[in-house]
Length: 319
Ligand SMILES: Nc1ncnc2c1ncn2[C@@H]1O[C@H](COP(=O)(O)OP(=O)(O)OP(=O)(O)O)[C@@H](O)[C@H]1O
Image (cartoon, rainbow, N blue to C red; front, side, top):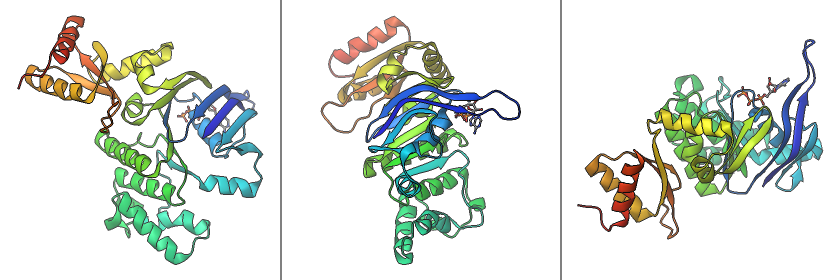
């Protein structure tokens, strides 16, 4: 869906300062239907990468191919058409403050020349979908942060994009609101089969929603792969640091990651309640499929984790 091939981006020198190499030989593939997280500290080059995907910037060298088309080679008209299929949401929402919620969501449809009646119907559906049908006539200043981001999501989906780019979309929100926005994004991903690319400095976001990820430092991708593989065996020192920080934050620094099938997760839940075992789901989900696997971090010493393994393999959890 998105191929980034040996891409470098250098911004020319400004105010007698040196030229800045924001991206340095980045190669990355995002497959259709991925929820792809890109993590890194400020200045790593994440935003530049997003701007190359939606054609707001061109690479200095290398290629960015989106849905089979090399974005930087498109003529203006084709680029505009390609951009309609790429939605974007932002940390600070970027809403139009003098327009109501309804008018904000209608805006990209007006620009695309969609007939009025169709706009009305489509906006109604979108507001319903993001849970804001009741606030259609409100102004952004009357909304909470989470509601503003829901408007941003509805607006980004207005032209039925194939790709949704999320630029630190939950960084201005509290943890509870973050969880509800990530849940909404997950539902939309499932319902629309949309490809999501998220940039964030928060590993917890990647852990909650992504199937694949890349870690960036100094304009380079230092590690990429599935979230399961990277969380269970981080290789690069920066990735290790991110993973350790996340586990430390969630108070589960010691312990082991084990892979469970759905019935074992249920057993572990029972054991946890009865015996005070702490665990947290690292990745995976129970969807009802036979081959569902969930990676779980069990907190405790090696002996405690082994005891949990023994109990899980030893038949039913005690009732
Ligand atoms: N338009 C620009 N002109 C000059 N330098 C730029 C421009 N945009 C970004 N940079 C520089 O490129 C580097 C990468 O910036 P970028 O915004 O892509 O990183 P980031 O990982 O998204 O960080 P942040 O989260 O702080 O935005 C930084 O050194 C930044 O100062």
